[in-house]
Every structure is written in C-alpha cells, then in structure tokens.
Length: 211
Image 1 (cartoon, helix red, strand yellow):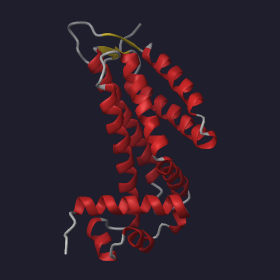
Image 2 (image 1 turned 135 degrees about the vertical axis):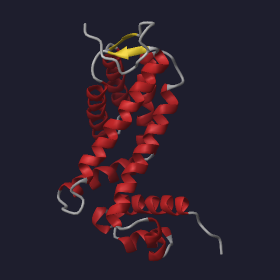
Image 3 (image 1 turned 90 degrees about the vertical axis):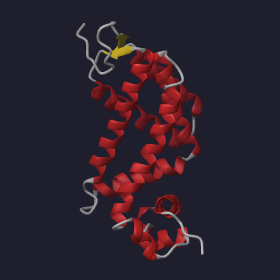
Image 4 (image 1 turned 135 degrees about the horizontal axis):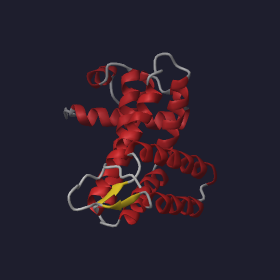
C-alpha cells in the first residue's frame, strides 16, 4: 500500500473540495462528499484537517499562494516597474482563465461565510491574505525596478485587489479577454505613476515620499 504524505493528502483534499464546490455548490461540500471525491477515508481527512471549516481556510490560503507565486515569477523578470505591474496582473488573469472554477469557489465560499457563524472570520482573513500578498508583490516589484512608492503600499495593494475583483467578476460574466486586457493595461498605467526612482542613499521600496 502506497503511503501518501500529509502535504499530498492535504493538496488532494483541497482539490477535491474545489471540484465539489465548482460542480455542486458550497452546500454540497460536506466532509463525506469531499473524501468521496478524493477517494479517501474520513480518517485521512482528519489526519490533516481538524474540521471542514479548517479545510476551507486551507483552501483559501492555497489558492492565494498559487496566484501569488505566479505573479511573483512574472514581476521579477523585469526591472521596469510598468512592465512588472502589467506582467503581475497578466499572471493573475492567466490563472483565472485557466481555472475559473477556483475563483467561483472562492466567491461562493466568501458569500456563504458572510451568512455563517462558524465561518464568520473567513471573509476578513481572506481579504487580509489578498492585501498582504499583493503588498509583498509590490515591494518586490519596486525593489527589482529600484523605485519607491509615493503612496502607502497597503493602500495601493487594496486598490489592486479592488481592480482584480472587478476584472474577475466581469470576465466570469462575459468571458471578454480583450476587454479585461484593456482594463489591466489601464491599471498598470495608473499604478506605475505612483512610483519614483530610489535615491542612492535610501533603498527602501516601501518608503513613501512627499511630493
């Protein structure tokens, strides 16, 4: 009998949960339905997750990590901040197009959580993860391009999350990739002007300069 590592087991269960939610909705994503989808036992589930709610938190964290890694790989390819921003946004969009059911699952989970006492903390945590991940990417992009942000990184990160939320909803509704590309172009143009070259003495990508 082949032993599965806890990491692989966790990943397989999260993938199974995404398939169940995408196919049948969040209400159908019971622990039993998830383990059946993954062809595992309940014991296997409880070996890596304390509860279904614990798994839902893990699901959110896993998807955000996937998006962040894709964007990070893109923005470090260039030392031009405008191009870095556009590549990062494109990386997010390509993940969306490749796995639209993942974003649908996240949205459904978010709306479900807003009405659930057991998962009441998840929406705040989900968006805190979004904001933190984007802020890290902004710092990395600025460092590579040797620029500093002229507004607080946290505020710029929140703005980007608002933009990508809107692009995600619009694309899921109309699947118009060209329209989405125009919005992302405009976003990169608008964000790039919020930077200025680093002065030689203060290499801090998070430094906020006063005009």
